[in-house]
Image 1: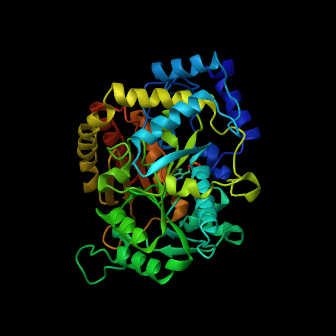
Image 2 (image 1 turned 90 degrees about the horizontal axis):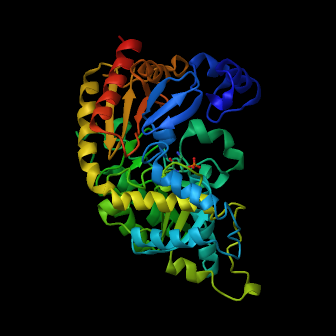
Length: 452
Ligand code: PMP
């Protein structure tokens, strides 16, 4: 296995040569990271031949399992033609065909596709386009962005600026631009609706107040519709996104929807914005776009935005942004095969039953005394663990409870990766009912092992 290299040697080289993302290296080896050498369907296979159900779809991107025959074949066929040719001032065929298909399946406001390599850059591009759009429309004063608390839109500097998770973002403050911050719709830890038994939408009111107060300075609102993923699968209340769209439209503010995590079927629809009939000005997609195979992202924009960038070259209305691998042919071929599978297998129609099965698999978890809240949106769930259910007090970070629970779930052949003390379930859309039950059992086993 593992390029023919002994597992212990691979681990030694990993310890010696590699710097892993979002990883405290002081505890990395002691937390027994997986060394993956292969995959098969919804399973990962490690260097010692052990198999794990991929409960987080390789960080939320794998759509139809690993080594899906049709995607393998599409990428192989594309390799037989060309792996990559530049998209800068030129075209390569798979990217053109994919753009047409993406415009066909996204809300009708979106008519243009701009490619990049990952979710962060998809957001970064939307921010830069929005800023330049207002300059080109003669309103350069509209240059501020609005983001929510607990938002996560990626790791590049613009995406970090609009992000709202202190643990990830605060350290970089000196690099970041100032953003208007609206409250996170985090019902479980929300102080805004104090005095009421249930949410009365005070966070939405607060966002509207901010938008009205600064309307003339705001370029765009950036929002993860459906759920705030890295914030801990914080689910947005029904109607939230529609209301933001109504208010932004009324005030002439652009709306950037970040569907990097929730798009491509995760919500139970192709895109979460369909649920509330919202048509954004920008839509950012990545992760599942290639079925989880290759780094490809897209920022979709409207005609109104695209047209603002038209003019003679010397007018410099051009959007000066583009990456070497923009429109990569292998990635686009994988994405086209992914869209074919969505159609051929009627994937979206099959999701309702899986979403119900996930709900059933989660039900036993709610009874555990350290489960504060179980949140589900489509085929995604977050199980927030607390030291004390009554006070909702968190565990000390040093206890690494979420990590330990996920590690213990491996006894049941399941691989999970938490967000702090929120255990995340984000399986491939190809997961079966039985496998969903296994996921639920594995988390319960993890809880009972770590927090007996
Ligand atoms: N936006 C959202 C909502 C995400 O969840 C993520 C990644 N988890 C990103 C953007 C960034 O995507 P990437 O990691 O591909 O840069």
